[in-house]
Image 1: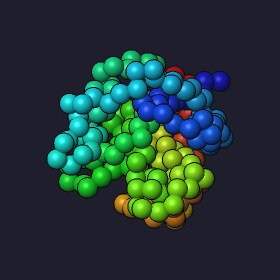
Image 2 (image 1 turned 135 degrees about the vertical axis):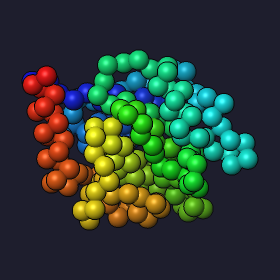
Image 3 (image 1 turned 30 degrees about the horizontal axis):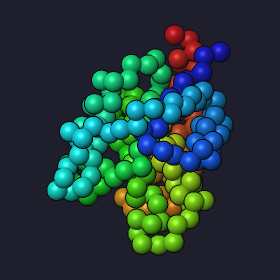
Length: 183
């Protein structure tokens, strides 16, 4: 049986408890998850917009795609930074093909001048990683209330959804997995 393989790459320090929760959540769908704690730990300065004080997510992913040549169905980068794409003030994450990046900065309560809450932060990170993993595996945004594939425009939107795929999205992932097994 061939499982879909996901690689999580940390580009900045991420608490181990958060990594463990990500692995547990994705593994519950039969996805094989590997972790690479990248020792280089950097984002390309050429992708940093000094006026906005944010990274251009498309430029970051373009750079990372050229540096990481692994045979995974999905490669997800985590960076405790802030990112944007043109036309948006910020993004929690972005997927291009089977590559995704999640920017963690706006998932922290401290960003909103509130008391730090590691448990809430962990839940948000797991949701956004699961969301972008869904995109890398071919899922679009979902309108089912609570599905992790709901679009999140604000951190409150992230809080409203679950860390789980709805039945329809789970069905799509399972069918994709069966299709890949036949190849």
